[in-house]
Image (cartoon, rainbow, N blue to C red; front, side):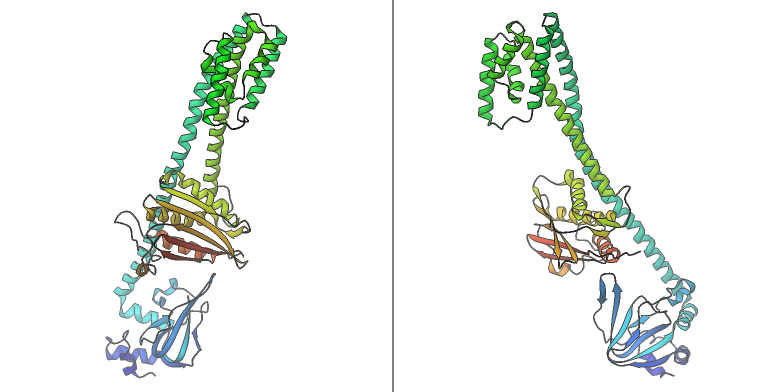
Length: 472
């Protein structure tokens, strides 16, 4: 039996009466461990509750990213082991951590069942309170996690809606103008037919129109002054040929590379009597081609945005698979495009040698979302956001989300990953973005998330293993 005066000297038991101390002494024992000795081992059956009497011990936890070791402690009365045994059947069956003596140490060792019975019988109200706090904390964490995801989703959705609106509006406008141009082109063609243009000349005109349409977008670049001079020159030639509204139709024709040589070609193939109608029809055809290009560009932009949204949300994708980090990061930046202020420049620097890595793509996108959102907030509308990837040591992917904001003060760097800790104003942050990100990176992917910060250069660094680490 352990001396009850030793137990009375431990802060856990100092308020217990003589009878309870004797009960502890009769059911527990004192054990000695040499320096380096293992007291409990993570993953083994949780059979004991241990309290330090003297010496020094260190706690460690094995994670997919490696072993996380706490600072050694010699504080008398610190405890470990089956600390949740009072939950009975709901208590964890194995140790969640390891405990090792760093110096010769003495510990009070109490069987887990006796410890659980003791707490349940001596402190029944405390058991209910502790269980309620535990369950309430888990429920609150789940609720806030869900809220954090919904908040991020709302931010991204607003940006995506804004981005989709621009090409959609451009397509609608172009289609409306296109309808009018097609009507006008039909009337021009009908006028040429009524004017008696021979079929072979009409065929030659169609061939010329196809050539002009193909030239749209392929004309060598000109300066604004060169374009203006070309339009003036063609306008004069058209006016001299008796073409009405010569100055209006000169601009679309010049954009297709049509000049005085083209005018002479039309005159030679179509004839002087049909020249004016033919040139107007060609101009209408060029504008129709330009508007079709606008519609194509707008719809391709919409398709690209939707593809990015699908990539971001990981619809129809296996939850755990090999993923391309460049695709994930680009899709996240695309979702943010409508929310990035004009004063912020976005730069990307991707390592072409970085291979795909195994991971939960949707969860990694949530990490990028949290980090990019924080970077944008830090810069307050002005600065440079840099997204960088690197291959480290051939086994690790490094992803950096960098901003040129004022930086994270040194005294806060150790706390920013704590749950509910936020540097934002009340109502502007839950304090869970970095906590969730850390749990996704470290807990789910066996990686690491840390920050390096000086004023004007803050870097959140995510390291992910290239080998498969599947976490439930």
